[in-house]
Image (cartoon, rainbow over all chains, first blue to last red):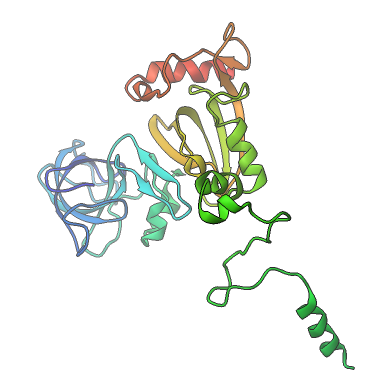
Length: 131
Length: 176
């Protein structure tokens, strides 16, 4: 249940560390709360220092950037179709561009398997562990 | 007579369970050998009867031994269990934080630390999707050595969410 002002950890290598939710997109029936697999608009609150070298091809985000992200882990429990209830110890997201493509190239950490059901198969395939 | 006619005749004479006309997936259990007693037909003792008949026999055995309140073989909170399920992720191992006893709705809360992140999963034990529950380390009683962990003094171990060192102590006991 991520809403306005909710903070999430970023688990890809786009450079951001902590983002704050500003808006939950395209949902009619969630009362303004985002869950796993929902797209949000966010502000980057903390980012890794951007290296001045032009070696990498990954877009590095800066502090204060307004980007989109998809929620991949929530502390709020989610029900699976077979009745299980899963919750994680923190809220995490992966940054996206406006075309629903990932900004980073790698994901570090666990992601929720509900992403597959919501259509984020690419993120699930990149994640080292899916629960 | 043709073979198909014979077969149809035999099928109509069989004592198979009646089919439910509105759903192919509905399972109609076969009628019990002895007819239900008169008070049950009136509705007395219905919930107790349902709690004995609704789960399948192996699930019922699971509920009545491992997840009962007083059975000598019951699983105490603080044990380490490994649950095998039908859908992904098929296997989840974790410390048993709590047993929520509600008859057929009995569920267990397992906590594990994966890649330095805590994950909790609540599994309903009478679900047909739950294939197997293995006990890796029981909690409680005695010296707390070998396959037996420390006895927890609480029924619900939610305090483990805030102390990763106690979680690692339990897992160290498992590995040692």
